[in-house]
Length: 196
Image (cartoon, rainbow, N blue to C red; front, side, top):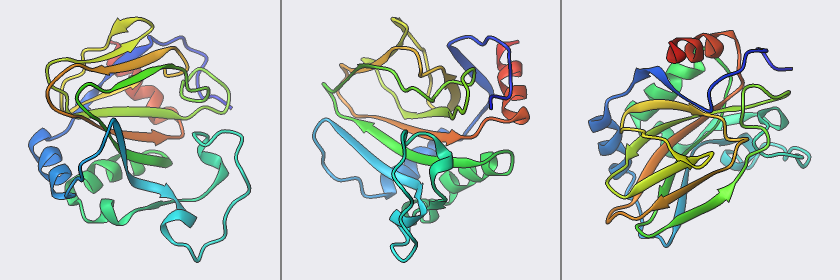
């Protein structure tokens, strides 16, 4: 069940930000490998993928729907104290599910698509917050056909049930931290503050 009947903008900068120097330093300490096109570093994942002794849950209709499994911090997150502090900030307020570092290579494009559960207005939704870490010239995140001007260290909600795509026309990779969570009154309050 959704927690609000309000209509929200398709993009909201939340009234919080994080230390970009610490985020960059810890991301680089993960000893990032060379990759082609797109790379995902799991920071919080389904528990059975972190600890293989745990039972595998039944298949999910939608992986983004956080209710299908238990979630656990990965070794990459426990080895990154500041990123863990960022994730723990949200965990003290709501149920955090999937957390990832997403990397897009120079010249990479994520084709336009929609994510059916990633919007606060829909039933049984999950909200994905995005914190850019490395977001240089030439990176465009297009939501409903218009650019979302996200700066490193900022925290953004975007209604990803709407069409969106990413273009990295720059010379360096684009790196974002994404944090999925179950919406609640605290998150609604943060979105309200961001809209004012």
